[in-house]
View (cartoon, rainbow, N blue to C red):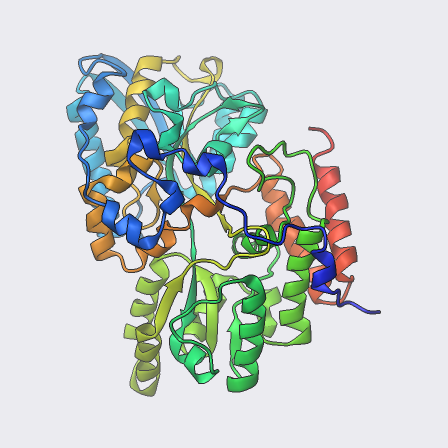
Length: 490
């Protein structure tokens, strides 16, 4: 059976030039002083420290500072594994809110991430939900679909929608209504080892511009050095897989549904279109044809990419800005010749934009949102003014950046102009590069079934093609049938 498919034929109906940023991605400029159309690492650096904001004054325009009330709030926050700066920012946040609104009593629960979703489900059914919860970017759609959230968006806390990224607003939208306010947003970047590039005859200071380049570079690296080129990940039921494959799929013009479009309906299946099949073919070419990626890609997560990367045996991967700090830490734990190799890898570690495709440059848009539960399922009743005061305080420029200090980015785009952003850029290496990907961010489909689509259906499609169980075409068509069945009741 012939598994290879000509990628040019697959793209015959796809757009052959990179699309400009969507209109929504250019909307920030006039009212916020942030121009997303020129959102480059240099621009981000120059923007930082150019504005000051008065948090208390902004909140006072939403709810008077002497308001007396009560708030219940659930979130997953700092724990023993958190950095000292994260712990300090969390503590400072609660002190600052109490100072700003001294008459609002806050009853909060800092829950374990792995337990929070089930606890919220149980609480919502039992009418003992909190007034407000900060949830990962995809969780809110489940509660909105069940009618358990009340419509609540940026306008309810005094903000314009231009203060938030289009991808963030997509993530809080269900059937045309806003059901949350973005708190923080995150994107990843493309990382490579400049020394391996040089050894393979590639420009050591230049990232691959396109995904076709990634395939070619990966092949050349394998042929010239014997090392693996790209850190492909295809494990089933692991979030790392869609976070690294979907940017490639979107870049070629594909999608699980129509989530990459400016105004998605989440009803049009695109996992089997020409662009999606081209992306799957590219993965097949690296894994099967060229054997230029780890053979363990079928069971790997990003964790399994880290050891070969620090050992100088893997050239390219996708990861967060924190990956650099992690590699520094890993290098310190080695000794002798291994230490020399690790130090050389760190010295040659480079960050760049995630490659573009024929359709667009794309990255998974992650983060969290603040959601407000329906009053009829809130334990003890709803205090909407206390809710508005708290969410306005948390999602404004100051605290949306402080609470996202070293592991994300602020949800409110005005925060990029603050002195705190300037400090972050000075202390977190490569942050400006990963941050520059935000206008290219695409959230996973805002559907209750999204987790199963991304963590099961998409990885299974990869596995079916890479193992030869199905052809590239058949694997994509099979995934389309699975998605169709999943969303049949919507």
